[in-house]
Image 1: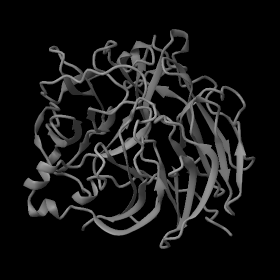
Image 2: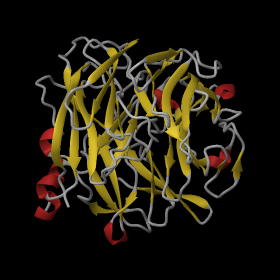
Image 3: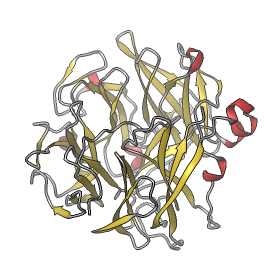
Amino acid sequence: MTIFSRTEDRRRSPMDCLMMTATAGVFLTLSLCLNEKAQAESSSADRNRTLKVANVVKVDQVMSAIPIGFDLLTHNDHQFTAYYNKNRQLMVAVRKLGSEKWKRIQLPERAPWDSHNGVTMAVDRNGELHVSGNMHVGPLNYYRIQPDGTIKQLNEMTGRNENRVTYPRFLKTHEGRLVFMYRDGSSGNGRRLMNIYDADRKTWSRFLDEPLFDGSKQDMNAYPHGPKHGPDGRFHIVWMWRDTGDAATNHDISYIRSKNLRDWETAGGEPVQLPVTPENKKVVVDPVPSREGLINMGFALGFDHRKRPIVSYHKYDEEGKSQIYNARWEEDEWKIYRMSSWDVRWDFGGGGSIPSRVGAGPVRPVEDGKLAQPYHHWKAGDGVALLDPETLRKIGETTVGYRKPSELTESRSNIEGMKVHWTGDSGSSGQNQVRYELRWESLEPNRDRKPDTIPKPSTMEVYKFIQPS
C-alpha cells in the first residue's frame, strides 16, 4: 500500500502568529501570542482573531514524564508524526488528510530519560521520508521510509564523525536539496557538520568541506538557532559559545548569513572563513561573558520592516537582573537595546535539560510601522511587547497575531507540573488559511534523569486550525 505520493516536496514555515523556540537540549515550540491577562482585556475585534478548530485527530498515547521534541510534517495529501509512544518507543504515524486512521510504523529506538533525544523528519523529492533522532552524544540513528512503508535502517550517512551525534536537523537549499545538520561532539567540545543528499543516487556526502562551527580546539561548543530563511532571501544563523556542560558558561552571542548555505558572511557583508571558531570576533553581536545570564534557550532571530536582522537574547543587567535585549545591525555595527525592566534574576547553572524561565521571541513587523516581540517570564508572565521601530524600546503590550482557544493552552491533567507542548507543521498542506499543530503534555525537564513519579501517558492530537477572515 502506498502511504504517500512521489511528488516534489514543498516546505514552508507554519503560519504562526508569533512563535519562539526554546532550546534546552530539546526543541519545543512555545506559542506566546497573548497572555491570559491580555486576552481578558482584549477588544471584541481582537477576540475574533482566535483560531477556529476545524478538526482534531487523535494520534496515540505518548510519554509524558519528560518533554522530548516530536515532529509533524504535512506533505501533499499525507501527514506524518514522529514521536515516542507510552512505552517510549520511537514511532512514525502516517495518515491521508481527511482520514482519522493512522498507519503506525515502529522504529527500533527507545527513548532514555533525556530531553535531548528529539526526532526530526523530512521528505525528499522522490517521496521518501527521512527520520533521525534519539541521540545525545551517541551513534547516528537514521532511517528512510519508502512510499510503500518499507523501513531502511542506516547506521551512517558519510561514515565520518557519526559516533557522537546530537541535535539532528533536516533543512533544504534554495534548490530544494535535502541537507542534514548535526553536532559532532559534546557540550563544551563540539562541531556542527552539514551533509547533502543526492536523491538520484540515494547517497549522502559532506556539504561543507569544513565544519560550520568548530570550538573543539578551544574546548567549546556552538549552540545555533537556524539557519533561518529571512525576508531578504538569505539564510541567517545566530548562536552562542559554551565552555562546558554547565548551562551558565554560555557567552558571545554571534551572527552570520548566507545566500546558499555554503558561503557565509558577517552582517556587514565581510566573508567568513569556515569553520567559524570562538577566535573570530567579527561575527560577535554582543560579547557577553560566561556566567552573565546568557543561555542556549529562549534566544531568537527576527527582522524589522527594512529586513534588518534583530538578534534577541537575555542576559544580566548592571544590577544582575535577567533582562531581554535586542541587537540590530545599524550603520555598520550592532546596536544593542534593552527591552525589559524586570527586578528578578534567573540564577541557573549545572548540566542536563532545565525548564526555561526567561525567553525572548523573534521581533517582527506589525501594523502602523511598529514591531512586536513575544516574551516569556516565570514571574512577570507571558506576553507580546509592542516596540518602537526606531529605538526598539517597549512602548506597550499588544494582542497582535492569531491565537489558540484558551482551553487548549491549559493542561487537562490533574497532575501538578504538567505542561502543554505544541509543535508546528514543518511541511505544507497547500492551503493558505490552514495550519496544523501537534499537541501533547508532559512534565518539565528533569536534568535528564528519570522522574520519581511517572505520570500516565498523554494523548497526542493533531489540530487543524483555520485563520478567521
